Length: 361
Image (cartoon, rainbow, N blue to C red; front, top):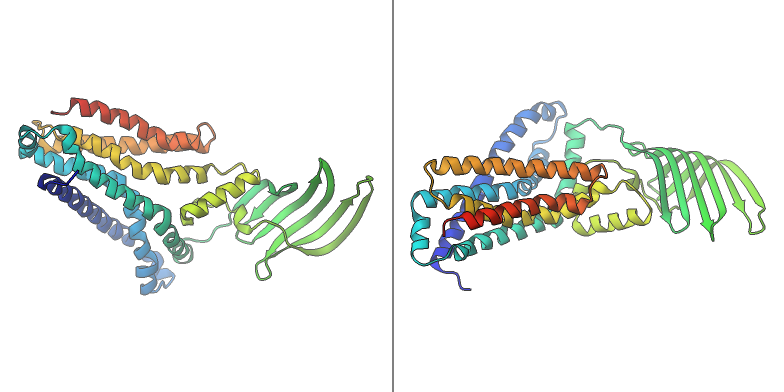
């Protein structure tokens, strides 16, 4: 279908209003963020170049992408209600254009912003997040002790490890054990009071270890020592329990990490699965919110633009609240991650269809 003048007119209004709104909110966000962190910058002597290019240069695209679905909705509500208030919608419909045909340029705009958000969130923003988060950890936030407890993991077929506690800051673990099982029989067991990672040589060092080798005949050979170097298929990153860790992964990296952790039998990968599905569901929500926005704002009411914007903001916060609640259930294991991330879209898609049939035709 060829774009007509009315399509180009609506598309320009859509994209123009969106980028103006997102630019406005980002400007306000930068000002408030700078006011909040200025004392930290001065206290840590953060270089101006690092503040501008390492932090805010990466802060802006991150929050722009985070707010994209919300401001798609607000932009549609704003300019469509203005068109309805100026009787432009009535004129378009009266000229023989159906409401379904009117949605065409809206969905083109939503498709452009959906593709933009998906590419940004999955491939461009994660590498920039590494720089931003490193800056925050060095100049803004005090580095805290992080890690995991009671780790049970299969690091490769037949090879299992256990650690009572791992510190990602010190890259050390306590009460470590490694077991090798072949044909359901235990062939090797190594226990160590401490285990630490040698980042220079890429090896693990077992301290105060005891090694037990089991033969096929059932004989056991014991050896012990103060220190032993070994190459094991595990990395310090495998034991990070960091809220923002997945934000630094591109889509292929996130997919590989989930597959690797699943193969190892790790049971705390729900946040990563939620992030994987959220990166698709969130951009796609632009279509649903656009349908709701057009259907809601195309009707001229006595309340004018204020009523439309008020209802739109209420629906926006309802969507965010719904998404927060559903993901919380998924993290706690009460709901599938894919259901948690897509359920708000399905519910609001139903609202959109209802409003579409009630919109002026």
